[in-house]
Length: 402
Ligand SMILES: *Cc1c(COP(=O)(O)O)cnc(C)c1O
Image (cartoon, rainbow, N blue to C red; front, side):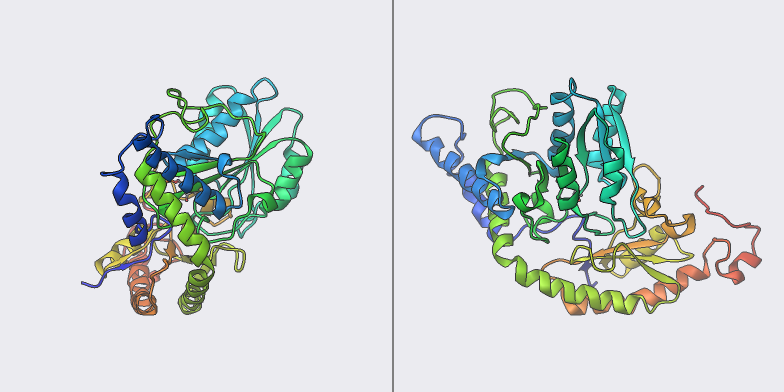
């Protein structure tokens, strides 16, 4: 069967060149970078080189990069590390309501420990208004967290404007760039952020490795204590092969981003144009201020899970923000935050393209989608949906799973 992977926001394959770069560090160059003898120095130099490469991707200095076990850990370190360091100064945190769970769950945990969180609303396209931040700032605000781009609807946030406001008030500003790294030019100096989280596996690096950019002078408390690696901010023997892989992936992204992003964007726009021809279909997120590989659609009257399953039968891998596919059985907080009504939240489909996505693959999806959507609409249980179904049943409308 044909296999078409269109869920690159979930994860990407590891670039062959990255795999090759990693290989020696599993075997012949297996030294522990913290050891003193010359054999280990090889590993240390490789980690240093990777640090320079990751820093280079976002215009940071190498000593402002701390490697972590994932993007999730980088977000935890940013949020909790800032909270603990500044708890005597204040216990108020401002965050957007569309943050990734790595940030939201960290905040929820902090709430249990006496911190107070103000969640910022966003507009219909997912953009957080900088003025909303200004209004929420208090004397005891110690952290502002707004993601660089949204992983579901792809919306790019006005980070520079928000970071400026934080800077004026001397509040630490954190941005989660785990989904935009490798897709958008990120310059931490220009953005003016204090903290920025990165994840390798969303940009053709290996899984299980991330990094936190910590601007010089930004105070942060470590969460993992031990041997004092990573400038005492993240103890634990360095994951040398993955760090090397992350470095290589960053280097490739920096050199090749311009060309692959252009191709992705053209294909993505072609996809959007074709899919919006299907009746009662909308594009979620911002029409222009969005990641170049992201398309998030809304098909009225159907359920995302059904759509994902049907597409899977045709060999297509995609994602939904609908309820049953999430571990909490709650519909996507991002889709509810942008104000989608109940029945629309359930009919969402996220398509994310990769560097190797071909036009044939997009065409295959475009050929499959209208028929699939129509079939699902015919059996839709939604009120106001397809009458021929509703009439013949006792179903009085609403959603089955509620
Ligand atoms: C994937 C992702 C993360 C988590 O990164 P992992 O490396 O998978 O732990 C955090 N934030 C956003 C926006 C993401 O897309």
